[in-house]
Image (cartoon, rainbow, N blue to C red):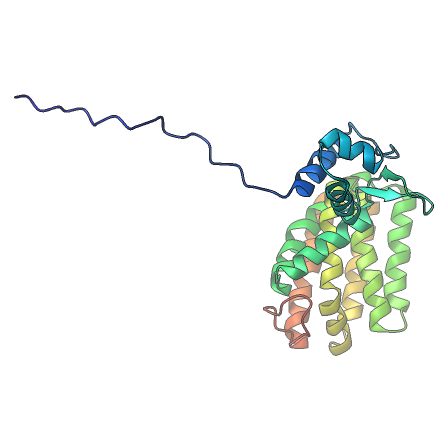
Length: 257
């Protein structure tokens, strides 16, 4: 008899989708409300329904609603106004968001080398954009920050000014995404930069020279040279790490090696 060349049929259709993960009810509730906020269906300043109203709408008990609201408060998406009981929609500011990103990076065992690589990728094109978009007032602010680096009484104050310089550049780029990318990286690099300034006598002078050159090029609206100088400046950070004896494999949040 002829053999059947066709494979036997399976008992049912091949599944296309994987099963949905099971989530506690409070997570599903908070996800739905967060989705409304992120889609702008609920806008900044809008009041949320009361706990009782939310419990009725979601058909869950009030303890589930309370836990969902605590999660939304922790994420910074809702807040109580003037100590009241009612919750309102809020939008976290850039500094708060950058802090959360920085905490996530630190908890993720990011190294100083990885942060330096990120700075090298972000800072030069950000500076180039600033050269095309910064206002005269913003350029004057950058010059003032550079003076603060030079005149700072100690390494801690100098590093705070250096971080401000990078953050101001991101703001001057006119791109909010770059602001959120720059702030956590510059802030997490601060401990290593302070160690460099403490241990390498010429470090602060080199930083001031670089910042002055960058500000002058931004003032001249020369984006190409601004980007090149910023790349050179960030490359110089790595040489400073080596001169200071800093191990780049050190995890952020751990004592420097």
